[in-house]
Image (cartoon, rainbow, N blue to C red; front, side, top):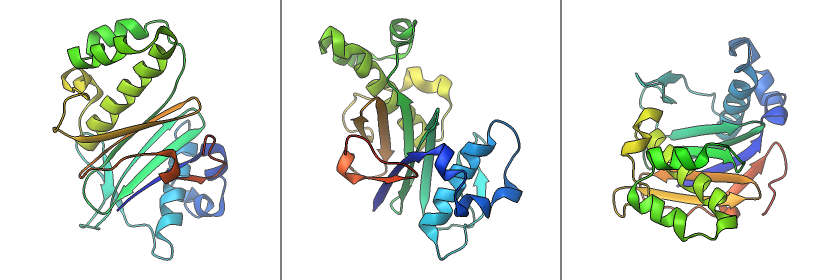
Length: 200
């Protein structure tokens, strides 16, 4: 079973679930994102208390003591995405589709030949969205594998059979997930929390 959630950090970091965790939250810029993610996990696991969360050497969070759920969180500006799984490790990557001066340079630096072919087959007005589609797929794979962003160049998200990765676009958001077993991400499978899901 996979569950995917999309919400607003500004709303989730101030709801009752997050308030209960406020004493444990870090201070500074990460606080709202931390509260939104932990608050969302607490809400999903209710009435169980939120299990202890530990971090791998590479910084990937997970539940301690063999708790049989895996999750991945991604955020971009005020948006947060969460995937929860009982089938194994997962990765999630969320980005706003936005103009970035060096996006073609980035594509040349880290995209595989197959990913470049995918990008070039798009009409010119769709290439920026295609760039973010490929970028988030690569990010989801790295997160599922507990890797580092610098490994992006070694990931080919277009390679068949090496991973189960799926993508959807919701208005100006690009969301990708990488799962242990095949899963087709669609907007109808995404549950909105802390704000309405556009495009549903």
